Image 1 (cartoon, helix red, strand yellow):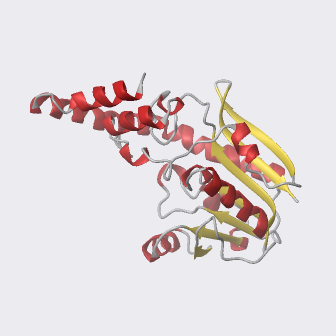
Image 2 (cartoon, rainbow, N blue to C red; image 1 turned 120 degrees about the horizontal axis):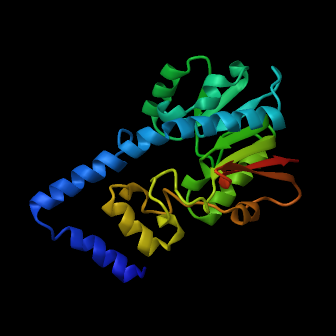
Length: 250
């Protein structure tokens, strides 16, 4: 599909009658609207299971030790779809510091949900910690939201700077359904094609590389600082790699 054709087809939807637009909007919202659309409800158990598997892999690769200082970069203000899974299930929560990107409102919401966890505000591309302040830096499904390649490189470099080990997970760009939109295959196309599709289906927030820039395994490896020991794990669903987990050691 060409960029011009994709834009024209989405623009054509706006020329339909008010009645047909209302019906289309209701259908779209019933299927794709976050977080109560049909697809979001059907896939929520898969999302929670994915978070559980990542925690199990963290415990396998890093371990659980009451002396282990852990930084989680990317905590959120709610626990929708298993959000903040690590904070809720890691056995030594008192050793966890969570970095939340946002305002005082996000910090206050996180503290209400997880009063036993230390939380700080910060940007993952410029973390407010000294070198090697932590034994491990953890980040799940954040690097795809920090911007284009150089911003993603800065994010990963900061994790490496503040911790001796890094455990980073991100969705695989080549999985056929993007978990942020639940729109099949659209993310395979260039921005000029996929962005209008996102807008048509009510997922326009993701029509920006500043908000969503998915990575393949090759692209993720290319972001790594030199001189690190690396292990890349692919988590699979129906035989297809849905998530990539990068484990780094200095």
